[in-house]
Image (cartoon, rainbow, N blue to C red; front, top):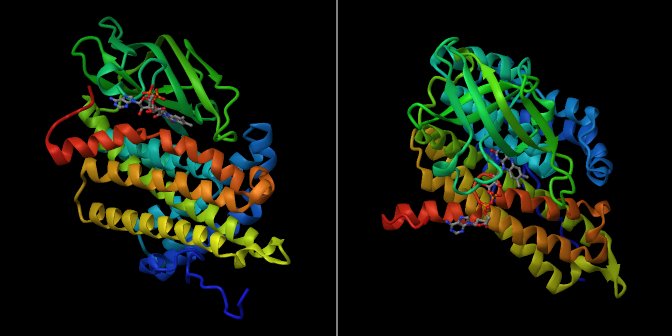
Length: 401
Ligand code: FAD
């Protein structure tokens, strides 16, 4: 191997060679590097064992909830708001550590917070957001059903009926795949109002009478993050539990737009995590009397991984800056979620490949990314559904059915 050069690294994130993270302010960069150190010391050591046992240890849950990222003290002290780009890089950094961790954090800070802030009345949004940021109230997002995943927009079958005598809502139905439901206070439950046929959203307490939850067993992806199957039998909640701004599926779609951008950022962070783990491995592993990092075919794979990561990062940075300027388009979020997840799939496969046999053990870290990427690929809209959203936008023809 001809050597002697110091390896190229980004200034804020090692694998960000184009320096996208340099757009962050100094205080924001400090939040990001502080997060990385915290994850490395408190979360990372717990991952492999938890993944192997398919359990979410309380210690890990508390460590993730202890990350003060929705209201970081360093920004408060600097008098800066939490910018959209930092929110994106926060998701990146969490998933760069581990996709389960990113998904767990995002259940509260992304999905649940978004539905409450975009879907609540101004008073509800203000009150709920204050409690969500401090974890005084924890929640998750309950949209998918056992019989309705991709077609949930038109097919959602869970019902909500207003009881004229008490004014309460009576909810019946089932939800599936709801991430983090068994460790959260409430499930933001989407149900169809039997009176007007429109989709509405109710914050249903986990312990409400008539709610039963089971953890979906035997998962081969996202083994730490627990997903629930939930049944609702004549569950009663008051009108105050209804998010007043969600009155049709179009209102749900407004939330999904933001959530897809968050997931795209995670898909990019996971590419960075897998790439960096693979790079570490190939620099240490020797075959034929030299580090395998010095073989041309290995370097080509590293370059493809880095190309995927860099293109994906550029895409989400631009998307976030566009959204920060007030331009929100379903197709732009869908395109980013679709593209970054596709590149993630290729990147984790290459990362696993260059680690050889050790790439299928948890020890090199890439096996976890490889398996967990499959969940990102399917949640928040599958590849096909996001492609169809883009296809409808660019052709003017809906091709879902
Ligand atoms: P299906 O809809 O049954 O799709 C199966 C296949 O058919 C897919 O490849 C799909 O793309 C394809 N397909 C379907 N329709 C078409 C079409 N018209 N044209 C072409 N292809 C089509 N949901 C929540 O509400 N909250 C959560 O917290 C949550 N967390 C999740 C976590 C994980 C790990 C997973 C796996 C899922 C989670 N989901 C959650 C659900 C997720 O959003 C759905 O899995 C997803 O929308 C796909 O639905 P489905 O699994 O029922 O697949």
